[in-house]
Amino acid sequence: YGGGLVLDANEVDADDPAAPAIGERQGPSFRDLQLTNAQILALNATPQVVVAAPGAGRAVIVDRLYLRLEAGAAYTEVGGQDTVLEYADGTDILTIDGTGFFTDAGVQLRSFTSGALGDAIAGQTPVANSAVRLFKTVAEFGGGAAARTLSVRVYYHIVDTGAFE
Image (spheres, rainbow, N blue to C red):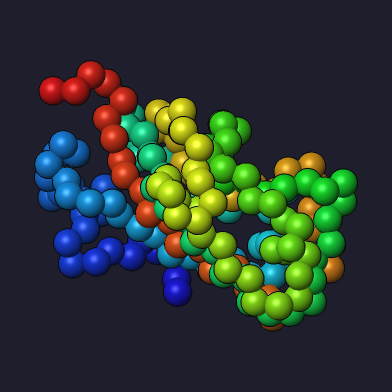
């Protein structure tokens, strides 16, 4: 896992100048990243960008999100706050209930999809030229362990925000 965009052979990087026009693309792109314990503990003060802003006249639509939290010392929550996947302007895409995920010491897996499998991603209101990020609402987690990591995989589409041609 790395911090960069990871593409299968049939996928197109939205920032590649040689990429076909948006309407010609097939299938979603995806990005993998891995957050360290320090990054997890600082998600309120320092949200982590999952998908970069796509540029003027474009928006990110999230199709699926997979999370895997390594086993380790459980995190503690203050006031039962959640972690959200959101656009950089604060518009929520989905809420990740931290109770039983971040607050459990065992390996945790979660799947969020726009279909009938896993926890549903509700209808999104795309925000033009906005990054998608993980953000901890209210306050930071407590606890955790230096070796604990969170693996994130997000599948997404880049769409035009103007009229269809």
